[in-house]
Amino acid sequence: MKTDTNSSLDFRKYPSTKALQCFETAARHLSFTNAAQEMLMTQSAISKQVAQLEEVLNIALFYRTPQKISLTPAGKTYYLDVLDILKHIEMATTNLVSHSDNTEVLRIVSHPTFCSRWLIPALSGFNEAYPLINVEIKEQVGPFFSEDQNVDIAFLYGTGIWGGMEAIKLFDEYSVAVCHPDYLKDKKPFISGVASYTLLHLNSRLNAWYEYFEQQEVSVDSTFIGPRFDTFQACISAALLGYGLALVPLRLVERELQSGALVTAWDYAAKGRGSYYMTYPLSLGESHRIKIIINWISAYLET
Figure 1 (cartoon, rainbow, N blue to C red):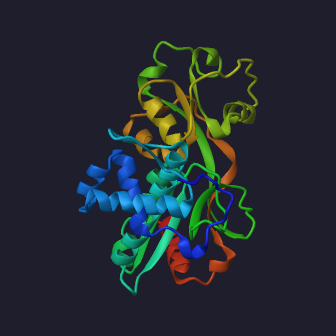
Figure 2 (cartoon, one colour; figure 1 turned 180 degrees about the horizontal axis):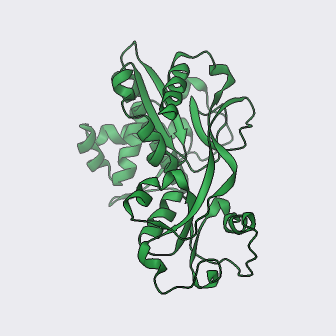
């Protein structure tokens, strides 16, 4: 088998999907025999497809012995790439056959906690009202988002200024310190005894507690050390379990505060540096699906 990888691949000799499927199956099982059983082919046919693939690529993908096969370093790398390619083909095909000719797809991206606690409730009834618009929601911690991503509209926190984007303000952010009711028992008043509390932190906002006290003109000498989390949802879950105090947007914990599952440790809501926005690429400003979702969210805010 040749191992010279310097020669470029003729576009007319790109591997076939069948060859990639045979390679992926053989690599997953590390067996041509088991791959043949899964693919409903003969062992020799699988082996031939893989050999032809190696010939096209001009590189060995497997080590072969009479007892077994194993992936070469190049084969391991290629396997992961091929697996990703086949998943994309499967997803694209599924999307195509599951959507009728007269439907649109509305691709939304949102921060995870905001998505589950505000956006999904806001979209309740949308599918029934607009059955020809299929909603796909992707949760993403960040960063958001470039025009080369396959996204129609995003729900973001920030200043409202994103290049090439139109931003519609939803509301300002006010954060409160919350905890499990039992967490406050036998503790000093929150501000004066802050050193005795465990403060929960969001990785993307490590200065939030400092700003919270600064807005109240309260001088706190303590260095804030405590568990850190990637999402507000994780902070809220930790607070519910009595880990400590979580500083989270009021809108995201209204349900827990109303039920008494969480209580505010200090009667103050700190205004955030940014606000929540609904944003979309300027190029989609006249899009039917964008106009529909903007009107829907605007009506939800009014209620």
